[in-house]
Length: 202
Figure (tube, rainbow, N blue to C red):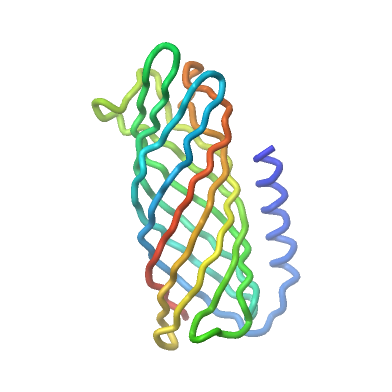
């Protein structure tokens, strides 16, 4: 189901972006510090918890006009996936790489120097085990999960070329099992990613 949503979202971005008007184009690059908080889930007799953590988000945004833009982002965080099974607890510490594309709709006029926006898109989360002691399960492998991303935020204009950005992103994806049947729950995971940072416009 998530893969179908991802494919439909990407196609929608391409169609709408291709039809966008040619006026008022500009670009932005941003860097933000993030939080990474995943809701607990249960499935297949496995209770799963991910430790809360922080990371960063790099983004490139191309504005077709005052209200429509396309966003490409890369994010990084590291957390531990804790799995409580009938055989005992198994924890896997992993680097989490986030690669997403999204369509962004921005309010065409500023509100008290704020530019609110909403976004929706798709991409992938790559869970790469660190192999560190205490957070490693034998046979665990790097795993990629398709993800749906949604969110919103606002930019505060400092000058013609610089803005402050506060943003929230939510990710929906299948919980990783690192290729291990014993950790496969089939549960849907939901991660919240609040962030704040600076944006350069050119």
